[in-house]
Image (tube, rainbow, N blue to C red):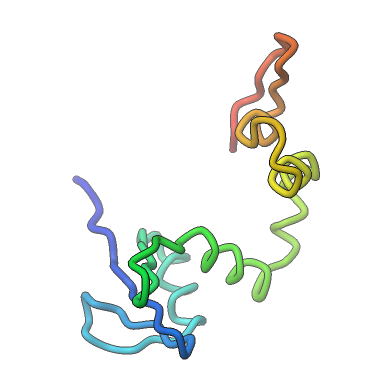
Length: 104
């Protein structure tokens, strides 16, 4: 059984609109929706850009920053520097043929 994606629109005033429920929701409600096992897609209303990753990362930072500590610093270095393979940094792989650890 495939899980339906809950589509959320984010407006410039930082409000979140759940299109499946036709209601505005809070950031805490969005976090709870995901914690319950639902998948969401957050679209910026003005541009149509998918900002799901940004919104979910902000939710983790705001509500459970200790979860960020489980992500290796190499991932953030790769993301900030724009150099290297972020997936490889995340999974412990290397371009030198080293063993790749499965992402968890």
